[in-house]
Image 1 (cartoon, rainbow, N blue to C red):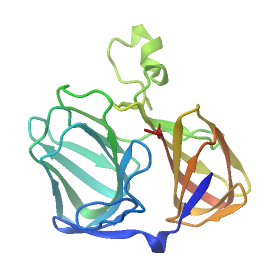
Image 2 (tube, rainbow, N blue to C red; image 1 turned 60 degrees about the vertical axis):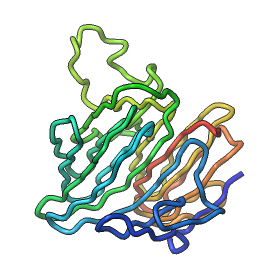
Image 3 (cartoon, rainbow, N blue to C red; image 1 turned 90 degrees about the vertical axis):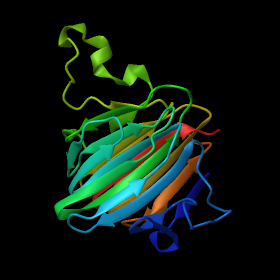
Length: 249
């Protein structure tokens, strides 16, 4: 089953200094029809003005992924070094046993970001942080794994000679059994993805226009896909997509 969420129907939440566009209930945006999608608890879109900051906390037992679509961000979290993220980069904070304060501040050009919260499958672990400055695009325009809680998705697991070095493009490591994927699809071409039983997929169109199973999705639209293991997305014009694969419960 596919349920379409069009961009104009998203909720608005007032959080700290921002007004966030929300796919699911968050802060003062309460919507019984959109609480979460499987183990995906939050999908928020935010825009920071130059030098503006966004604060959260305290938070525990969630993986917070922040993907930057434009500008630059510097992350600040208690107990961790500051990390800078540029356009196309990804910041992960697995809050584990708890983080009292989290902050992302925009660079001089501002920042536009998309943030995902995954419910952790393992509780009681120490908080961790990971950053990827960018991810190389796939030549075939298919889906690339940006973040994963599945060890088999990490090429470092199969290359002991790397001696701890991060392989270019290796996904960040989630505590949730989930994946975040990214694709840039040329016009008139497609990208396919397959999952397993008991999983939910949530597809977000970052830019462009695509079709999936006869549905047309424009920039900002999303599709919640349940009970379906295989999808094919066709770009009507060049499109950028983010895809979430999570446990249904």
